[in-house]
Image 1 (cartoon, one colour):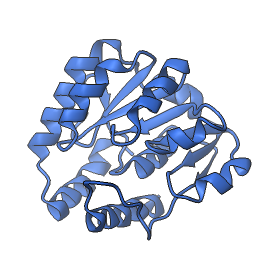
Image 2 (cartoon, helix red, strand yellow; image 1 turned 90 degrees about the vertical axis):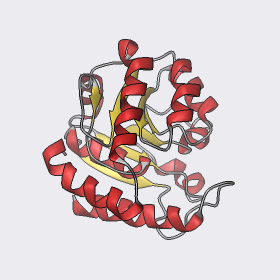
Image 3 (cartoon, one colour; image 1 turned 45 degrees about the horizontal axis):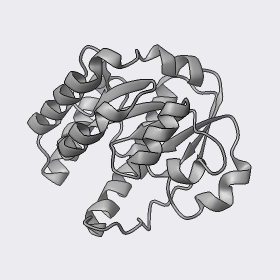
Length: 208
């Protein structure tokens, strides 16, 4: 999904949640200032994804039971990285730095490409963690892309991973560890907001 197609959806999302586009843009510029010089161009994702079978892994409890069925190129959505590392190193990690980031940094050092996302609510995490990724990174924003900060569409880590795989013409996309109805409770996080986010995630995936 390119930005002209994504922008009206994005505007509807930030209106629904009361988010600030300006804060999203500030976060993207911050991420670029920290990691822009060492970040990779989007072609590194295209080279891995195009024409291949893609397994996108979310962090729902069912992921443990699905591990034996995962094939092809593995994309971890944020917290799924920690579960997957006991099974196989993800090829790509899509993260807004909200999970066990230490595991993501470790996987990145071992060879996983980290697709690091900026939005208005993760500015502290960007400052803390973005400098610590030593492997290949690709930078993304949910607002207007610029320079080597990209936007392939998407709102949560899982649907961003899905839309990224579609954007780069994956041959087949399979989802594992996704539960759009029953979000995992996390300390300090509003479960109802998470539930609303997952409704958008499901809508965006089904839209494609």
